[in-house]
Length: 201
Image (cartoon, rainbow, N blue to C red):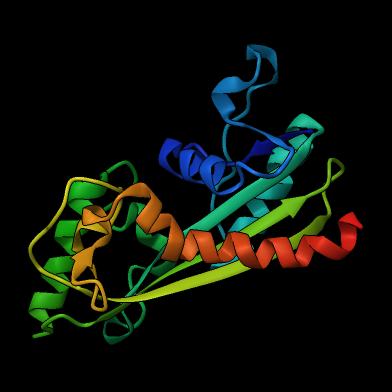
């Protein structure tokens, strides 16, 4: 079954395809659609990850007539009032990119006198039916600390500054399989599987 993924982030799409490799669905990215069926991703106007995941899933489903899967995720630093939170992808401004977002977050932590503050990656996944209603959701989180100096070449987003204390490495220093074993997105997928199980019996 074809399922459209309501994101323009190719890194998220790749992770979702890996995490759902054992499920008999074909995850389509926006670029996989023929030109006449392509659409602009939904504007993230929600104030929570759940609201934004729902908005993106419903928008993608209604635009394509397919089942849709959407992810909204980000990093929260409780000592910074939860920033960047739902603004994670555009923390330094729309289109600013990962490097600028990381620089702004590290600068805010430094200005607040924080040394390796607690940080939490959160993810919400929503599945919408072809006519729009939300069918199921999954949520996941991963605890770590924010470090000032970037470490590692893997991952994306805030991964080089997100240290997992038990491993002594950042997300960007983990292999894809290591990250996918503990990440917020992997845990959201596991939760989503549980939510979908009764519906698929």
